[in-house]
Length: 302
DNA sequence: CACCCTTTGAAGGGT
DNA sequence: ACCCTTCAAAGGGTG
Image (cartoon, rainbow, N blue to C red; front, side, top):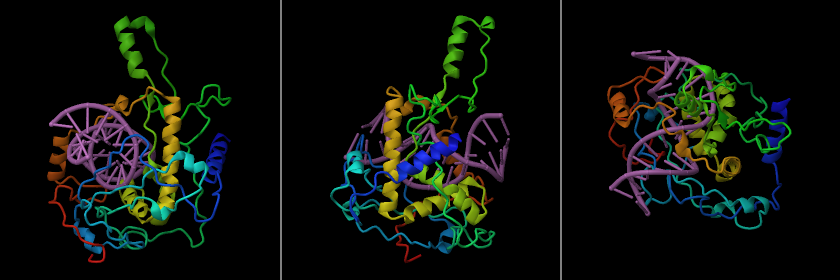
């Protein structure tokens, strides 16, 4: 029931408000916080890249002055524009130069992986799944909200929702303080546009491609993300922006830095080591991350 | 059982 | 301004 409520609310949000006019879109705006441009590495060529073909090939970047392989995302439209779609057009949005990284997993034209994997099982005409992202729960977790349901961004350090009872009789004050600190529920980062897209589309990809490995699925989703039109992507940038805004309202003092070190991630050196050492991926193949930077080649050449 | 893999985007710190 | 790093999700794979 709770989920239904959430999903209904979300679907409402997805369709609210109705555009004030056909073909009208929010005016492009500068990014919400800082004007940092994500910088991703130059795409690395995989031996499998030559087999790669996309059902919706991403056009080569129009602006060849841009850095090779740098993905410049859509500017998140101004939130006020979300409620008053009055002027401008998607065509005026900053051009997205999306150059997908070549897949490390074998891909096929149809669903993003090569055909020696099982063919998609979803029957033709299978209804498109509704957006089922539970993260954007406007209202939940808000102080005074009747449901008193914590925002999904709040997760105990253990990852489980229930906190363990605390036996203070056996702890010193310092220990208890440290323990309390350690047991403070973690406030997760708000999901970005791509993460929201992944949440929505993962099940569909799993059904279509009969894959379970998230690494492979995420590669497919990454490609599909690049294949989306700017209008379609803008939808997720809007949602992500609302996520961030809600997150800021709920946790004013929170910083992404708060969660640094909570995931025990390998060091950069270790990362390079593991790639150089040829660690296998989920398909038993070897990532090509350590390879020399790939030359910029238009998709049509491949 | 903790971490890796894989993706994009946001954000913070360093230079 | 730019670069680098970390973390958001996900779940099978790995040591």
